[in-house]
Amino acid sequence: MADDAMTRPDERRQFERWQAEERARLTVGDVTVEAKIENASAGGLALRAQVAVTAGDTVYVEMKGLPRSAMTVVRSNGDFIALQFQDGPNYHFR
Image 1 (cartoon, rainbow, N blue to C red):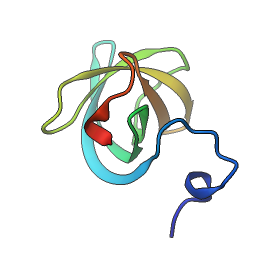
Image 2 (cartoon, helix red, strand yellow):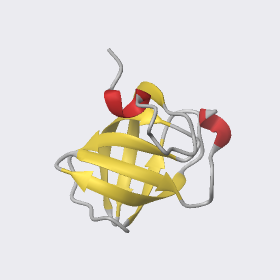
Image 3 (cartoon, helix red, strand yellow):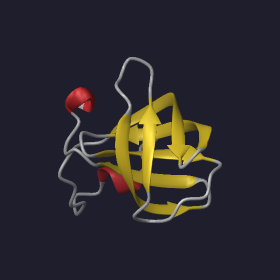
Image 4 (cartoon, rainbow, N blue to C red):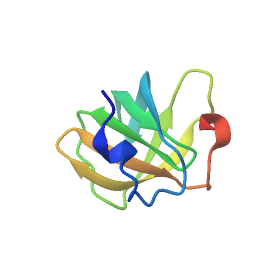
């Protein structure tokens, strides 16, 4: 079943999001943890990881087959983290 936040007509997203069940590595400072990507778009990622972050933090994400990406934490709540690509849209997710 689709997440309502991904299908509501009043969503003001610049990029379409896709459900994902990919694994990634998330680096925050000198700590690297495994992460589970929940959805992705050309603008960013939503993932789950057991690491403390704060909105505005710079983190790095590595996924199989894609270059390491610098990202900014947009929001976090528990293990949920929303990230935005720092270098602009990443069209690997288009």
